[in-house]
Amino acid sequence: MKVIQFKKHGGPDVLEYVEIDDLTPGRGEVVLRVRATSLNHLDLFVRRGIPGVKIPLPHVPGCDAAGEVLALGDGVTTLEQGERVLLNPSVTCGQCEFCLRGDTSMCRTFNVFGEDRWGGYAEQMVVPAENLVPIPDDMSNEDAASVPLVFMTAWRMLIGRGRVRPSEDVLILGAAAGVGIAAIQIAKVAGARVFAAASSDEKLALCGELGADVLINYEAENFVRRVREETGKRGVDVVVDYVGKDTWVDSLRSLTRGGRLLTCGATTGYDPTTDIRQIFYRQLEIIGSTMGSANDLNAALTLISSRKMKPVVGKVFELKEAADAHRLMETRNALGKIVRRPHGGPDD
Ligand SMILES: [Zn+2]
Image (cartoon, rainbow, N blue to C red):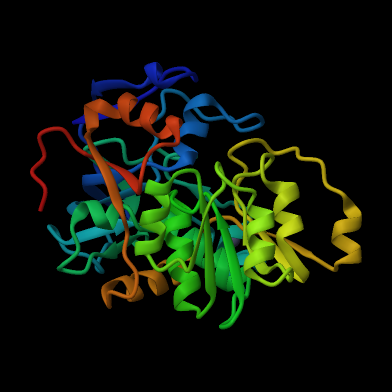
């Protein structure tokens, strides 16, 4: 089978399209025939190398995948050969205090396909049976592969950690990116008024289609000033900021008293300067969140199945074009999720 792998960390050119042996499942495992994979920023970080994280090489990236069951290992009774499934990318112990209380992304041994294990830039993957979730009949493989990581991350961040409630104002930065697309829709389902900030009018048009109420082009205008105008100088209840260093200070300034800043990433840098007085005088909360649980994924899939939310697929690449797909993601100009199909594999 074909995979994209890298033998050293670096730019998109380290991604190689190679042939390796077909996979066989162990006990409790399944071989997934991957039909579609979507890209996440994590893929870029893994390819470049993450300080303090040792990734055995060669490595196959890719956290999100969808396809069908190709082979069942011993003891697997919950799935059938040929069944269409998507991947829950997180692997947890199920036994530590965090798993037992449902905070599985805090698991002491938490790991993710595409980072800690070989991922979905491949025609096949071996995964534990419990990581596979049936795909609704009317959902394409590309759509299915665009759901898991961003929707479970956004669900946990906004609902589980962020406690977004009806009537609240929620500002989402980088709103046309993967997590943003999910966050807009989840905040709307929760009953909030959504302020979407993005770097182009084309991206904002997409945010508007997804239900965002206030559209802010933060290349053309100061988003703090616009938020203050729109809220009668009050500020918003919640800011979703995974942009990081470039927006952190202005995110804090956009919040009303007692507001919550939710963070699940820092794509522009992780060491902004914070004026601590902003936090204690105005009694702000800074809430970290990462990934999500199987329950979070199921909740999102339920609403997607009932057409209250939807994944957004942007450009589709073939597996062998992974380096081009990474280059597109690095430009930050991509609209919606970038998705890859295995070379030569008919979809659906
Ligand atoms: Zn655990």
